Image (cartoon, rainbow, N blue to C red; front, side, top):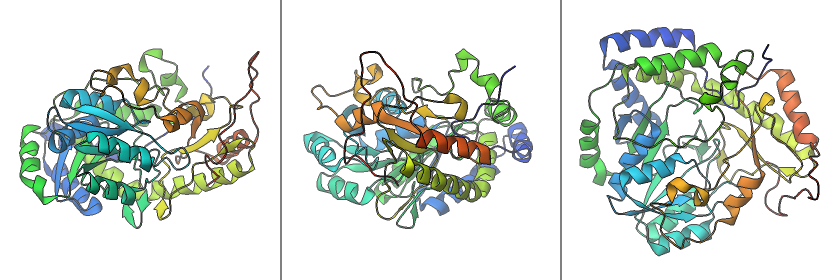
Length: 409
């Protein structure tokens, strides 16, 4: 019998929200899409919104706007492989800049170098609901006439100087996939705040086509509701073909519209989002205290003015701990973008190494923060933070987090 297994990340879906999405799917009503469009414009201060079938599709549209086919974009060295899929489908070339392990923000010197080498746009991707230094990014982008694309797929209710992550770029990307904070079964959105893109964005909204019913999205959300809880999560996680918890490359496709069912689900999720963010922040505060007591471990520190949403709680380990999937503790991305084979066809030759990204690949773990954690779960996570696992590898010595890399949040 499968035992209790914690979800690494969760975007709760309720039975009433599933029931409320059935009628829009049956009738292909556009009312949920209009309601979601209005809600996103208000919350994220957007002039234009395009609702898409995924965050990757929204990024494809953003790259077409900001770079055009054959243009160049600067990507962070440590990020989801979906960025590679979007770049390949949009037909753009990629340069890389490094990430500061101590803050998870762009390494500004490295970013300046990438922009100086030539880039029409820069994608900034806040990880795990941790805001990045968008003010300094804007200074550099303006200096080199590059458009800022904020990939806020993991924004998760984070704030910077009182504004939500997702409202800070010239163009912003949202994702409504499983485990992204606002779940609609799948889906995404492109947000624009620059009048020079108004006509083009309006044209893109027409190209994605009419809304689909969304039965597959409703089925996925129903499975998430049924099995996405610790007492049952062991069932899907035991099925190798689902590849849960892995970073899997999925080629991008021509962007399509968000489904009616997904729009209804995301509207309901928006209504609950503030409560979920408050819970994640309380749990993250408890984990931060435990990390301060841990040996050879530290949590990246938020930049001034940042209020993280903590989609997950990231820590850097000195080499003494192992992943605990049963507790929802996983390593970060297994490869930097520089190491992704899928990116090579569009990566500009000769891009410099990204040592900060390599540090994150070696040292980063993420811990769950979602509302299904119980007190006992939080205590077990705290114990993992405080007490090293003491991995023994013959002939090898445990590494250390580089001095000055970060201090506990």
